Image 1 (cartoon, rainbow, N blue to C red):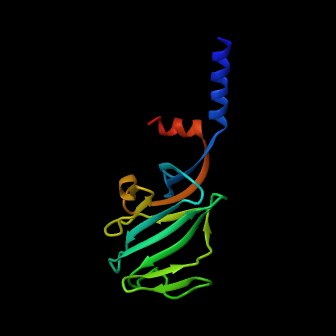
Image 2: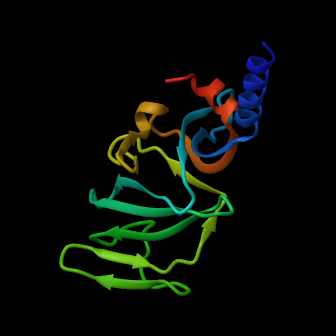
Length: 168
């Protein structure tokens, strides 16, 4: 009986003290859903993910690549697109480098970090998608088209994560 209690206590201690790094997508719109977490998944620092979308004016694909940093910030690594359009880079800024290929333009060397990455989910064309490892998440399936969400990374206690996500 004492041994069983000690084992359970030790397991509980381990579970309560273990923290995960998680990527969250949450509602940033004003209103009752503000702050509501729509997606939560474990990630590792150093891991990368993409936000892919179709530009509403040029109707061409845009790929934004991000990296999760040790300080839980999100760095933009690069952006790829194949034609210039509104709200896309038009020329090198600051220290960015540009690489012109036959089928795309690659902008990199941003040296920019974000606490949260803002995304307005496209209503008609954009179809914003988050790709991380083998997971593809269509944001319009998580929240309403035209809605405003943000992506962040945070540490979360394993027990809290399991309670919020349910054991799957």
